[in-house]
Length: 211
Image 1: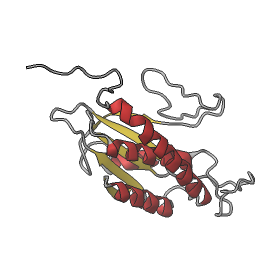
Image 2: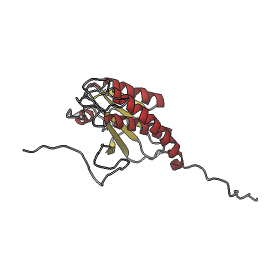
Image 3: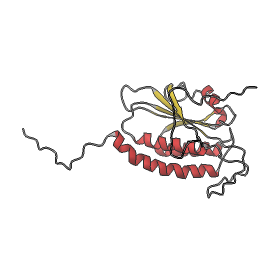
Image 4: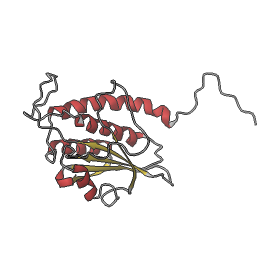
């Protein structure tokens, strides 16, 4: 049997990494539009009812399984399973949802329409980013790890993270499997725009006050 060698112009099969670029480009455009919408409609801790509904609407649109009503009513938990027979550890990705009691004076076209409340700490961006991640992951054929998405209310002093944990967001009792590794983002104005920073081990896990 003889075979014909591929021509120099032939391309190798697309890998998972090859597929990521276009998916991410699409997700970025979606995330920007979503962030502007969320910025227009900020909600304080444990009052994020519109935000919760918007998150569920987007997860429904891409077919990602989720439950809502956690953490006093506005927390959302979603799960994207692995696509392999022997998956690795479940990874948790977290975004906070609440805004702050601040009057917005930015003058941007998408400024807050909720007087006296503003997404001044970037949680609108966190939610939009995580929804974009969900869109990308849901379209990948190769997912070696299951991923749980946590949309947490009341980060700004409301102990929303503990409320999510108390409602089974990490132990697999509400959805998916137990989370083994957790990641989140935090806006850090001291870093140049476009810079992402991290370090090995736990980081930004708590705030403590001393007299």
